Length: 121
Image (cartoon, rainbow, N blue to C red; front, side):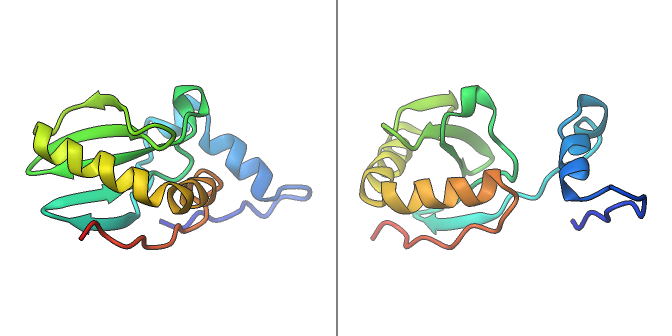
C-alpha cells in the first residue's frame, strides 16, 4: 500500500510516519507483511513499522493457519504457537541467519522492503 504525502507546506514523510503510528490511524490500516523466506510449509515474514514489544527484533512465522513470533536475538518464542517440530526448525533457521534477519528487521521497521533470506535446507 502506498501512502501519499499531503500537499501542505512543511509536510513531509516524517509527518506521515508520525500520523501512521497514532492509534486512530493504525487501527484502520493494515501494513503489508513482506515474506522473507519459506521452508517446510512455514512462511516467515516481518511487518513494516513493527517496532513494539520494546523494540525487540522479531519475526513472524505462519504454518497451516497458526501464527507465532520469535525473537531474532535468541530464537525464543514470544507469542502464538506453531507445532513444536516446526518451531524448532524456525529457531534453527534464526540461529543460522541471525545477521541477515537483523539487517532485514532494521529495513522493515523503517518502512523499507527487506531482502529475501535463504530458506532452511
